[in-house]
Image (cartoon, rainbow, N blue to C red; front, side, top):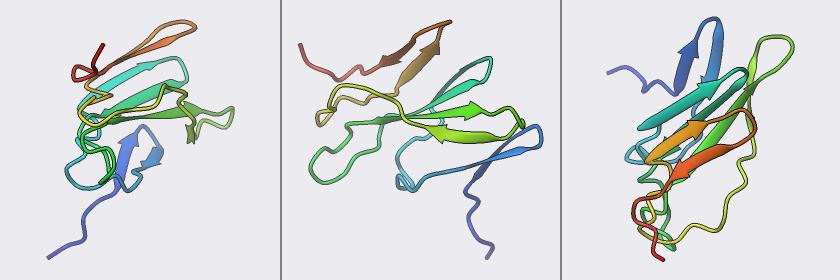
Length: 102
């Protein structure tokens, strides 16, 4: 049996998938604009924060290759499902977390 693929392709660039686990749901939500791409993984989480979710960011550099960037966000809590939806605007991004409490 072949190895599992850990890459996402866009044009001639290859984005490496971080190890979030097979059930993280990476790519459940995608949003891009210009040189920015956000990918949601609403089922990501560890033992201390199951289903907290995550959002991964990628930016295209001057050479045309894509690389990971840090996505600043408040601390996730178990069940938040952060990354269930994502949107990119001119200067801001929005991230859905349908399980987040008040």
